[in-house]
Amino acid sequence: MTATIEQTGLTPTGPRFGLRELIRMRTQPITRNDLMRERYGEVIRLKVFGVEMFPCYGLDAAEQVLINRDRAFAAGPAWGHFIGPFFRRGLLLLDFEEHLHHRRILQAAFANQALRSYHEVMLPHIKRGMAHWGEVPNPRMNELFKQLTLDLALETFVGIDLPQKEQDRLNKAFINAVRAGTSVIRANVPFTPWARGLTARKELEDFFYKNIPAKREHGGDDLFAQLCLAKSDDGDEFSDEDIVNHMIFTLMAAHDTSTITMTAMAYYLAKHPEWQEKARAEAIANDTDYDTNQTLDVLTRVMKEAIRLCSPVPSIPRMALRDTTVNGYLIKKGSFVTVSPYYNHRDRTVWTNPDEFDPDRFSDERREDQAHRMAFEGFGGGVHKCIGMHFARTQVRAIFQELLRTYKWSVPDDYTWPLDLVALPFPRDRLPVTLERLS
Ligand code: HEM
Image 1 (cartoon, rainbow, N blue to C red):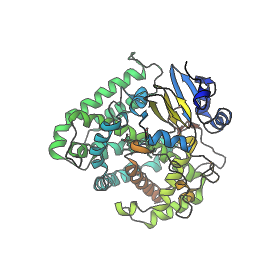
Image 2 (image 1 turned 135 degrees about the horizontal axis):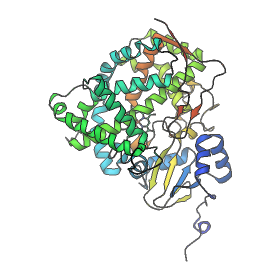
Image 3 (image 1 turned 180 degrees about the vertical axis):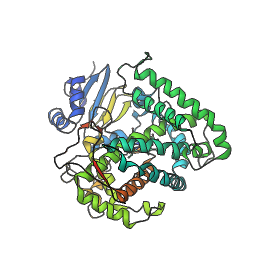
Image 4 (image 1 turned 90 degrees about the horizontal axis):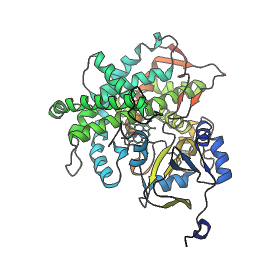
């Protein structure tokens, strides 16, 4: 006879909820999840579109899932469910030995020396890309950052001089591949985002395959060249197919996350002009070289605080590879678990007044982010922790240093951004601001 949950000593989950509850949890990410946690415990049970899902609350649960000591969870099948056809065999879609093997090679493209080169390449493009912002009618920060990061990605990641028409074609293909993951119809039906995503994937593949031979021969300071030349300490390198897969995935992983982070920084700095002035003073007093960029303390704290309050990856999924437990709750083989940095970043056990914008919580004196291994999980944790974290910090600091030196921006006192949290967070109005040129 099979033992009941109570006989096994496991904690029973509450009733099973459906799509309506998932939408409520997404759209009221703090209040609704607080309520669910209070009523039903640390692990909630959902079934949506035939998939069994277990949202897990709290930092200990996040540690069990992301650190994954007994290898019960996999990232590949979980992320693959949402974005697999468009971003197949990207680093986050690989697991265990294979993931480690690829990550070791890819690491070379994110080493200090490589970041230094990317920084040098991006600086003039940031300056040029931002020069006309003062003339943009009705500027919206989210749109400006999106365009700038797309343009920068072509320079720092792809590093090939392309006619404007070709740049636009690539950018469009890339945007279509990203959008496809949120398509309601998940099949190759003409005119759907899914079908456009598949066409886009093919266009991106063709582009990268065509350019690999020249990159392998001539090298360069861009990520594409670094991937063509990257070798692990054991001398392993990537095949052409690996390079194409990693390029397409990395472009995606870098783009929206950086755009969201900068939009959140712009929002909070507009709402807190005293912090904007503090960051501006630092931006003006310091050089723009790579070594100085790494020491911009106010900007680093503002960036971390923006990611804490508005985590660009609000929810991290994994799939259970066998029957296992999280915090004593049974998780059945084949079901999904999710950890939410967005929710956990308001955990009152580690953050003082968690709803407030307070970059000083990351200061050496306070270090609230050190209170638990998973207190700050905006870049994830465990073996899949963001490989682009230092790249993102360098790029965002470089962009904000230039922005703060050149412009001042504000929003009306009573403005609150209408944040859409159904997929990745973004302000529905794209964050309109008054932008004033300083120099
Ligand atoms: C502020 C910006 C960024 C944020 C908040 C962010 C966040 C994350 C998170 C949460 C993960 C882990 C997902 C999981 O465990 O399921 C991740 C993984 C990853 N990120 Fe980022 N990311 C950012 C920027 C970037 C950039 C700029 C790049 C590349 C240049 C990048 C490349 C990657 C890659 C390749 C992975 C997969 C790592 C692996 O599976 O080993 N990210 N990122």
